[in-house]
Image (cartoon, rainbow, N blue to C red; front, side):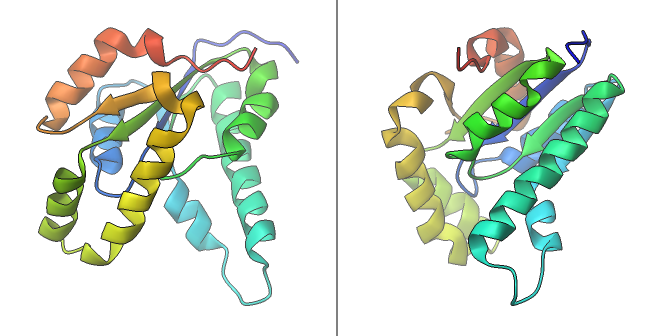
Length: 175
């Protein structure tokens, strides 16, 4: 089914406290037709002690994929807000490739002090260690180099306006 669509997929990734959810809301408010998929909500739908972690992760990505496909097939843009794509990104890309849609992959980052301050300010200090770990993982992965965008000392509207002007540099392509 290689059908053309006018929709796009925007993947906003990065560590906790970098501004993914805030930017998702600002970006979505500026679009006519958009489906927002929050990875954490999809992940938290899967409860129970009997689901092994790997199985839970695979099921979560299948759910994100299904929601994305349904939206794209109905000419609705998709914004995916999730903290860690990792090895799942290439799998997702391969599954969605046949829809002939542009995928923009932006890894939001901020310096360590900014992340710590943001998480402390919102009362999520328990996420600091995980956020700094994710920041290191995103930054050390060479494949992420062209997808990093620094949000340090920037306001959401400024970030969105900047991203709109340079979004083409974040097109995802595994070819």
